[in-house]
Image (cartoon, rainbow, N blue to C red; front, side):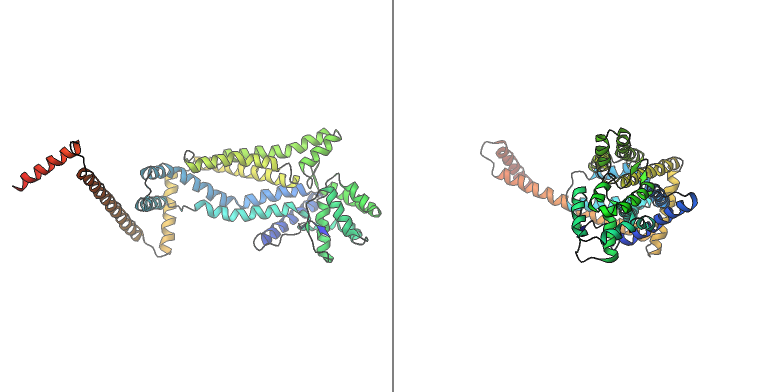
Length: 422
């Protein structure tokens, strides 16, 4: 059979993270049902997104603090770049690197300061994407609702060919699955397929398995309960909702579906607007970042039409959470004494270096020696270059044509040399 491979992700790094996040989301789903009698995947996605970003707040704080340091450092970084602008020799490159590193040491920060936070956050974001893209693999209560229909399908003769045709008719992306797959693995693949069926596709499922019409009706009633948010099936794409409801003149659902991509775009713009600027917007890297900040919201706008509504909700509330965090942190850093913060940062950096057995005197001595060596190399290179230019000039004078200014200058020079020897 051919089925969509969307069961719980088994990657070495993202797999365990996705399973842990899925376990938390399953707990949220169950808690909402027990406390408030609510079964809703969309609301679970929102609550999990908010919870994750609350947990990542310390990392966001460190990342924003690094951005503030970069703002403070930027004039000095620009001065160093300007000092060595146009110098491509190795000595100048080493001197520029040395001065830049000393500047980072002065402020007690690392050039890779923001990368560490990103390296921690990125796996979490990608793992959340996996969870939200295939909810039944992580929320047992949702998966259980599909069991009755799946049992009926696997008991039907020739169901593999029927499902293959059904996936083709519903235009669900597929990947090859071993025909000998059976048991829980096969059941999970079928659940993956059924969860991706759009709201208008259940009639085709009933046509494909007419003897399971009652099971289909029961499952759809459950899906209407747990899989809808603001009237939209979170497994469906906004584009499919827009096209099908436009044809049936259900313009209210068309407007609701349009709100998902629009909200994703606006929330991303708001998030980028509140992000702290480094002050390097005029250099090449700053221009590239500005271009990315323009293109990313547009890409998210178009992608939001083609991915499930559940993913759109995740993108929207992720951007909203980041925007709220950045707004709060911006207000916080407006009241912070940056000089005092720099001093504390220098003390922390000093303690870390001393733990590694590196004293401040060693750093200053090494920096002084390296700078002196680099300067000497640069001076030597400059002297050698001047000597080479003088040799070229003398050779040109020696070959000057009779009657030219260079020829007359040579005669004067020789006359002076003869008189000086007397």
